[in-house]
Length: 511
Image (cartoon, rainbow, N blue to C red):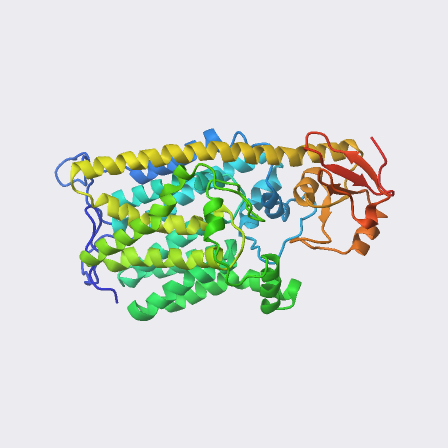
């Protein structure tokens, strides 16, 4: 059982003392009124400003203004893989072993109703904003209303959080699941919220749907804590993890033969996972690109990344403050879970993407926000406010640059697909080559690869399909086609910076 904890300035006290009368419930936790809250009539509860709801609303507004418009016409590479799985209009792209189907399940109803990318972006913006509110709302009885809202603001203010909201990518949803699961765990170990155990199980299960390996890393520190604090949460943790992993495990046996075989294939796809100190790649890609593989990028605008270096220091300071106030668990657990979720991305792969660390950022925002809300002198509060404002402005600058770059790349995929259609490529058709997956999706074709991270067929398989359906092989500027396509007809693809489509003889020979 968890011992009594000392709440923050506006947090509700969390104790294990039984109550015989009706008290605060998980749906209506007790929180002290924030400074400046309006006073009602005698006996009425004071009205507090809904800061968390305002943060979620601002998060949606930023997406609608800065992200959705430039990305409203085309999907990115990985997005097409996830969305194509249940798109009734196009063949599903190859789904590699490391992926999980949660984001495909989430987008399926929208993509089934309409092919509009804009509608999908709007739906995901609304859903991600609601999820931000719901995930951080779990923490209000633990750390208080002000710290909860500030943590949500710190996380939502990151450019990678903002660009991920309308995108069909899983990492942001893992972050929301991890924040909610950790919060429900803390509420469950107090022993006075029976429904918290079920919410904990549900959040772990949902997280596993979006990224199965990440859910295991999430569960490890929670299980370790439960062994010492409250073992009654163990069945719910194990049950939620089992339910969430069930689909991934079933697919492992159906497609790969066993869980072990799927993990082996996943490791090979990720570049042979092992001990790889990946901090340098994470640092160099912090302001983009969206995917750094192979990671040859150099860090742009280093001054805008100081927050990344300060984050572990702030987390350590929050931990020290929590130890002095004897409220260690609410600060230490999110730090431990963040560290666990960072292990595969900082220590086990040799490439990086800014989105990989979204769950860690979301969890670390909680103790950092708790530290900031405990600042007492006005000058310290003013300085903290200025630094946070500067951080938000700097992140908006990076967001604009990265979004513009992503939009240009997505439009190149769409332009290549338009050129293929102009050449007469019509479904059923096949596209292969380095950029095949997103271009094939936009063209309504199937895609196949004979090498790289998405190997899905053989040369014999490509030639067999080329004899039956129109087939195009894509090459980048200055590249020659592989030996089996040397006699195919080349056609330059306009507005793609030099890409060429090589049409198989059985396919169309021109417009």
